[in-house]
Length: 136
Image (tube, rainbow, N blue to C red):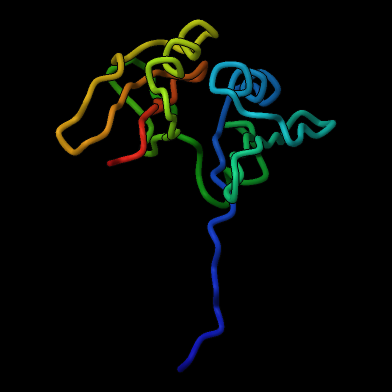
């Protein structure tokens, strides 16, 4: 059976404690522009190219009964099952900017054997953010 489906990856939704704070943090620390923060402060979006980075509260009754509760790490030795990754031409400068604006440094940028420079930080909710160059 032939299919006319032509899916496009549209959103990555990040579950956070405070949507407004997280949107402002990502704009300042990682250099994104805010596309939208709704009046309820329960949904925010960043301009990020073809795929939107969206933020919504980790605790919300609308979806918990349908899909379950969001699992939040309780220590630096745990992490979410998804990692947010951003591509930069100058990873060192991007890492420095993120840390200067409130990100917690996990691993400073270093050259990897597969031809990429990669560093890691945690955002204000403890979510791991990979900051890397494009793989050569």
